[in-house]
Structure formats: structure tokens, C-alpha cells
Image (cartoon, rainbow over all chains, first blue to last red; front, side, top):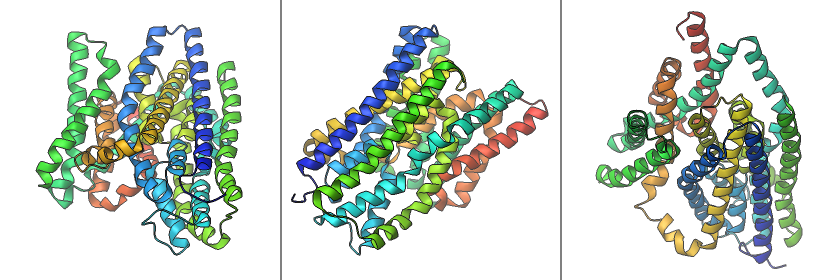
Length: 241
Length: 217
């Protein structure tokens, strides 16, 4: 078979992988939805989770698509499509592709035409990410058992423990916006974006509490995120000149 | 573990091991179809360039996110990826909106629904984008939109942060101050923010334990 980064064969492989991922997602969605109803959760509430998550996912998903566009310049469309739909993220895939290319003594500046180079890149991308998929089934029992032990021993501490997990993660991603502030005004853009998002969320919270706009709960995170992204698009050219 | 979670664990393991095989079969299929097996030394060299960092991050992410995402959410989230930028925020937001705890069965259900929905939506958007790539690539590549794509995480965590911090501001103080100071002192660590998540968690846990013992929270 003649090699081409955008061959029909590679598209068929990609489509098969994507269908597998979709099947797994639908399987878990249907099971969880049915269980939610058995637990007495209303269909309206469960549907609101589906709806609000769908809206919220659109903007980050488009940024992932941008990753496919970036990688497609060297790897064609099917391989980046697979990698960005299964486990991958651009922050991993691009360095992995570059590392494989540099080990072969080539530069990733144009579309790969050599099948051996392509297969090396595909293997490095795959093997590099494999622990993320192998470890959850191995560690699940230990992690869940540990959490249960903490909760059973002291319920209040168990709740604080759980909140600490969330806040530890959130703190890291809030703190990182300060990384570039010492480089000058353009370095403040992520901080400004974060503050605008927080302010919009604060306003949504007030509207929900004071005016009883419960429906806004479903959209609040999406509104604050999109509002902050629009702000980023408007403010960046002004700041960077 | 109750019956539902036990079964979720069983099905989850079947799906995730199958996913591991499917993922490995991609480069195998490429090698067989084009009779192009990778040269072993460059393959190991290339792998060595990324594996130490990404395997470490992989271990950290699994330990950190599994308690937050629940059983079903973890098995699904780690196959579909983008845990930090989509799956974990989606699960947290959904559980927050419905007022359910992450370690309750309701939390397990809501987290799984959120992660499954975001996986489906992401997959559909990427597939649609791939189908229309020649049309939309110039828009995605346009310099006007770049600031939006560069600021997805601040835009996401600003909104999410305000909800969680306002509920637990005492608990949030120590990790937040530490992280802000750390990134001001060592901006180069920004690329390793994923590795620093467990550091933030340890600080939050230590501060939380002290405040809990003193009766401040």
C-alpha cells in the first residue's frame, strides 16, 4: 500500500477508534442516567447535567480542534484526529511528535512522507501516553479504598479531604496565571481573563440568589467562560499593541 | 462499594483494557499496512525524550483525579483525555449545580453523566471539524482568535474557582497563596502545572488538617 498521511486506510482506522470511544461514552452515559433515575433523581435534573455540560464543552473542544489543525500540518489529519480524541492533548502530542522526529534526525517542518518516520512518531505518541490508560484499573481499588477509609473514620474530615482535592487543583490553575506578570503588561492578560471570568460568575451567582434565577445555574460556567474569552479577544490587541 | 459501583468498576475495567488494546493497535496497523516498522534506537530515543515527564504526569493525574471523577468518570475520562481542561471541570460543575457530594452515589452518577456527555460532544465537534477542516482551518488559525485559545484555562478556572473558593475560602487560602507566590518566583514552572496539582492538594490538606484540629473549619 502506498503511504500517504491522509490515506483512506488511515481514515478508516481513525473512524474505528472514534466509534469505539463514542460507544464507551454512550454506554456509561446510559448506565449512569438509568441509575440516577433509580436513585430518585428527576429526569429534568439529569437532563440539565447533559445540557449544561454540552454547552460548557463547546469552547474547550474547539481549542482541541485547533490542536488537530496544528498537528495535521506534519502528520495529516487521521493520526492527530485519533490522538486528540483518545487520551491526547496538544501539550503532549506535539512534544512527542517532535521528540520522535528529532531522534530520527529530521525536523517537523513539513508533512511526513516516509512511512517509517510516521510509524515511529505514532509509536512514541502511543507509548508515551500509555500509563494514563493502564494505571486507572490497577490503582482504582487502592484509591477508592483509601478514600472510603478516610470517610468512614471521620465524616467531617472526609468532606474537608475531598474539598482539599478540588481546591488544590483549582489553586494550581489559578496560580499559574501569575507566571508571566513579571514580563510586563501582556503577561497580565491571563490574570485579567481569569478575573473577568470570576466577576461574571459572581454576577451570575448574585442573579441566582437575589432574583431566584435558578435556570441560570445551568449556563453560569459557560457564560463566564465565553464572556472571558470574548474579553481576551478584545483586550489582547489593545494591550499588545 | 455498592452493587452499581462494583458493576461500573467491572465494566470500566473491560472498556479501559479494550481501549488500551485499540490504542496500541493503531501504530501496529500502520506498521503492517505500510510495512514500515520503526527503527528501534530512534524509537527508544524519541520515547526517552517524553516518557520520563509524561509517565510521571500520568501517575500523578491518575492518583489526583480518580477521587474527584468517581469510578465511571475515571475509566471514561482517562480514555477520552483532556481531564484538566474539560473532564474534571465538567464533573465539578455538574456536581456543584446539583448539590451532590463527589463521594456519594449521586455524585458518581452525575460525574459520569457529565464526563460522558463532554466526551461525546468533544468527539462530535472534532469529527465535524475534521470533516470541514479546509473551511474552518483559516478561522481557527486567525490571529484574532488566538488570544481566546491561549486563555481557555484562565477563562474556565476563573468561573469555577470563584464558586469553590467562596464556599471554602479558609481552606483555599494556603494553597492559593502558595501557588501565586511559586509562579511569581519561578514562572518557568508554568509548563509543569499538572505536576504541581498534587503539591497544591498536599498544602490544602495540611492546612485543612491544622484548621480542622483547631476548630477553625
